[in-house]
Image (cartoon, rainbow over all chains, first blue to last red; front, side):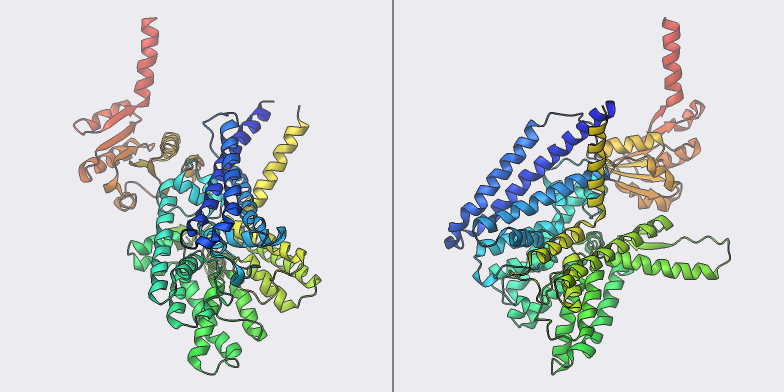
Length: 493
Length: 133
């Protein structure tokens, strides 16, 4: 009986939080309206944003206001944080899809696909950008901006009470930059916002229009990859613009804690970081390989081979998803190399997706440590550590198991998704490429993603993007907790 | 406010939890990694695993920037030493120490630190209760 009351109390608190977050999402929907003064013809779409925004703010406010006050002095566990994160992401995705539907641009599945792709910073798109007004292009970028930082991070940095790590950890952004969660999230937003502004400036300097510059700076830093042009960065065919994109993509794929050490000028610690080393190795290793085996038939000169190769390696491993051209004419070596890079993905605690460099690095190190221990005396004691942020982190066995489990579940989901694609008659290499791109929230497409793709394929990709962004466990935790609580509530008297 | 808590036993951990929840910046130092399990999920500060009698550990905890240092390890000698380092070497404006053995309170005479002796508090309270009633 007592426990039943306790459960009820906890859920009241959760609903209050979800209410606050819902209002916040409503406020985000108002942001694209800032475009209207510059492009007055977009005023026809004002209702598509205004109506859902007002509805969300009101619903959120009512949830917050009229949920009876529970015991105030409770804190959120990781699982409860997970429930909040899951609900607020689902609410964010559904409500962000509404403007596309209200404007009659997309049907339900397509609209959900587009907003999932935005919030998860994937960048796959079923929108024809040449036919899309500025307000919707801006809205796609805004989704990527907030999705990149994470809904909870944005909210914690501004309006939410700092009720603990549960919420922060649940979103798959677990690095603590400063000794307080509120300060950490604020710092993340400053770094992220600062880089975005710098990106806009750099893009305009190298000759991009302001509107395109804003959209591409956001899309590159959030490792999202929505472009305002049908052929992405390739549209400009300009080396300076590509170089700016390189820098922004690399910045986007680096962990925020590592950025902080870099900004504090601790370069030696920066270069000790395993993720940075691994990233450098991947780029240095795959660029020439892809160039030699895959691109040398397609391009005449060495610089153009390297230019294309380097860009595509970077866009795949940073999980951004900008591209310079199509992949249809690549041979299988190049396609599979990109699939591998997309599976690995970028850095933890950055805006990137994929398995994450960090986990690969841990597994590689763990393998090396295992080999080393084999040659050591039986009772020798070893302290295995890696550098994370600016701290030495000692790695224990359980931790390695967690990482291995994650990689296992990731690959399992990957293969399951590929099977769905194959069942619909797509080729193996196209299926693997497209689903690796969805699951890793990359956004490169080999041509399967289109407005007329089968509905099942669209939803498979939506699920893939969602799982990939929220890193599986949180969703499992949250669902399991809700089911077990509901069971207890119903069965006990 | 930046609070450095040394010793993550029950006292240290509860204090750290409450302070962190109240929005203060908290860093906790303890020599045993296991002790950090006492911290709840409302604690969002840093933990440092190390011996607080080593100056490098205190430096890692940025003791020079601390507004308050709370010393709550389960060893009076360590407490005395760390409190003295904080006060004399780093001029921390507020140093608070938990004293275990009431006899050792004299160590802190002449040092501008706040001491609380749990045993003495208990004894005083009990004594008062017995004698006045």
